[in-house]
Amino acid sequence: METNNNFTGSIELFFRKYENVYNRQQFREQATMFAKFLVAAGPQGAACHKNNFFTRMLYAWGLRKWYKKTGLESMKIIAMEQKPISNDYCLIKIHWGAMFEKTMEKLIQFDVSYVVRITGKMEIVMYIAHEDERKSLKALGIID
Image (cartoon, rainbow, N blue to C red; front, side, top):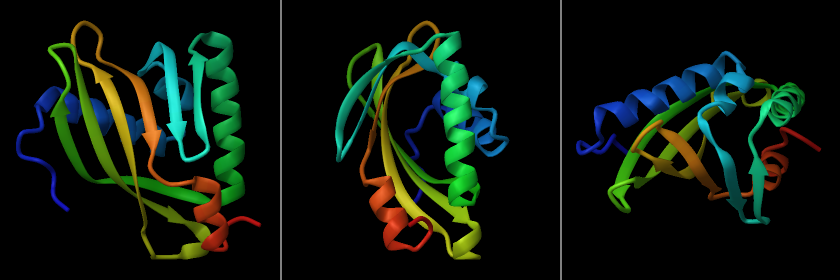
């Protein structure tokens, strides 16, 4: 899978920053890339989250704890696709690769789609996990 050639530079830079702060586990900084209200969805359903100082602290604490448990070592953007939705929003599908302690050199691949506001302050307003993360990690023997 290759990066879509129509991918605009500013959106690509935005997600490269997202990838970078994720790998540095700077989750509070990553949370500033989300809108004030964020919809998170996946196979288990959807939820709306308020993005403020308190929730960013909880988000950072929760992700650090979760990724320590899973042994996540790094995340890598393998491919990106962009589809305009309107003048203000676009849909970005990212094909991610993750390295875990237990999987050694094997890259675990998965997809997440993001709805991004592209006018004004660029921000993620919604993300959709394509796979059930817990179910996938259990199947791989990464978690019990």
